Image (cartoon, rainbow, N blue to C red):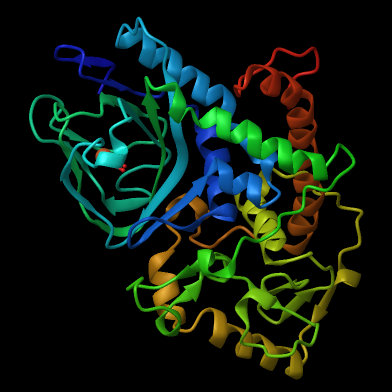
Length: 400
Ligand SMILES: O=C(O)CCC(=O)C(=O)O
Ligand SMILES: [Fe+2]
């Protein structure tokens, strides 16, 4: 579908507004930061969550995209008034998620939402099945999500819409709502959160993630009933990419998930263990997802001697790993169904690209990447604070 202005300025469809690289970067951020969402089988990554988990630097890639979306929205709807971003978040839906006919302002506490923007970060038929978007009346009747495409519409009852149930894969979007009401400006809240967090993490500070409370990472089919039939989403995301986690430290009780989430971990693949420690599960997940994102494009230093860092797993270590998996993954089949990896992350022969040399290169490249983002946040933040707004400050030294 080409760019279409549909009927009396109530909705607009823009193909390819986001580049593939922008979509991949946001996918990376989501897959290493997401928590359980607001509805069953939904996962989300909000900007305030990124700040709260010592990952403020991940906000930076959102900034130019938010600006571009706001410009296009204001232009198309011919806005003669000021608009504020009310919410920005990455939202993914797994098998079983759907939403019936609704408008986005259909609750008393959502009345401030005046415009909706949905950016598709992956593609129907390739990354997931089901998940078609429908408008109840008018054109286009159906949108087939494709990476980079964007739909914008008024959040009122002129745009009643629904999304079909996801039947497999993980459908990922960047969703934003805009408001005319400045008291709902997301930026004001973000600037204040950033002020508190950046104080404790200056330029020399680390970019290592800190987990939020462990129940935010606990997925269960029926979210009312908890623990027993669920799994930890960080462990599950690593599992579907073919990794196990080893924790060498002894703990008081191995079934305390919140304790396990803050312990140093090591990566295991098959019968091999990488003898390098990550500060916690989120750190390991970030590096693994970074490796999946950059894959074979990473510069590997052939002279680095990786052999000394990869060791064979011992029987006792193997037992510890399965004990850990029985607590954190429970039903492995179930976890794999929720996060089944589709073709986009696989090489042509159907397997996930992997070798330890690549992984070690990913550790170094990840560090480079987060430090660059962190530097940008620290350079930009004084301007954001002054204007109480997150925007792309044109500094002489540019990202990346
Ligand atoms: O993801 C979509 O295509 C739309 C989602 C939606 O309607 C909503 O979150 O209100
Ligand atoms: Fe909606």
